[in-house]
Amino acid sequence: MNIGSQIAWDDTVLPFQLDRSDTRGRVARLDGVLQRILGQHAYPPAIEALVAEAALLTALIGQTIKLRWKLSLQIRGDGPTRLIVTDYFAPREDGTPARLRAYASYDGDALDGEGDAFAQLGAGHFAITIDQGEGMVPYQGITPISGRSLADCARTYFAQSEQLPTRFSVRFGKARAPGEDAAWRGGGMMIQQMPQGAPEAQHGGSGEGGLLLPDDILDGAEAENWYRVNVLLDTVEEMELIGPHVHPTELLVRLFHEEGPRVFDAQPVAFGCTCSPAKVRDSLSIYPAEAIAEMTTRDGIVTADCQFCGAHYEFDPATLGADGTPPSSVEPDGSDPARTPGPTGPSGGP
Ligand SMILES: [Zn+2]
Image (cartoon, rainbow, N blue to C red; front, side, top):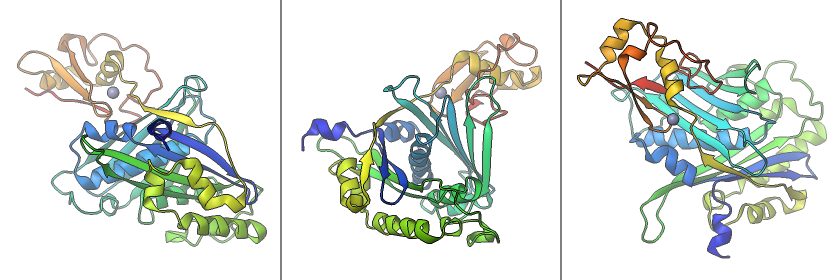
């Protein structure tokens, strides 16, 4: 193995199919993207872990959708971990990278930063929004937060909202290459039973609060196939998922060689944000003049920082707010706080 072939798998999602068991899947490797998402924040370890998990799940799920614009994950709880948001933007053309961004909002005083951030979400919901772009009504599916991880929530989401038996395995951590700073990297795998007119569960599910789980929507040969590939996925080791020394293709052969694995073109993924001065200005247009005055700094400017990418914006208060310049049309990118609360926030003060 050479370095070049290792690097070729970094920041990619590899689609695959298992012919014998009618299963499709994805293998994701994120390193540069994960480092870019987490490196710009000083999140407590608990929050870093949750954002890393959410980013990997988003890359795995986003690549399975025929997406023209954006897929978003939103996990909102009533505990100290308040909100995790991710966006996956479809590649503009075949072969170009999909773009991924993520951020978290939490109560720094109440959070146990070394504890389990998932447990500190409390009660709330796990939502996936698919926005196909201008002129299209976004589709949103919601399930309650359940299980012990975001991967559990995603599994329940697909069983409950999409009637698709789905399973995720994700791992992440910081690794240090010789002579370099420690950097984030992560990997994950998704498997999903292909739709075969799976029988609808009649009497509620076996999950928490009657939520459906994959086993509830399968029977006969499909249930056997699903059981078999899950047992095989259970044997995956952390370093096989995270890489870089085991290639995704080698991993698929190792795990699933008897299931007839086939791979398709890998999708590159890059960090990407869609914020811009015009969009941040639009997001500030909801504030009345008094609020804008409160945001104005001693230097007479209003500043705002993008929570996704860290971009810093400065404005003349006279041009802002409900009494300022009329906003340009809002583009469907999620930087409108009414739809994705909090990606940009005024950072100034009197
Ligand atoms: Zn940004």
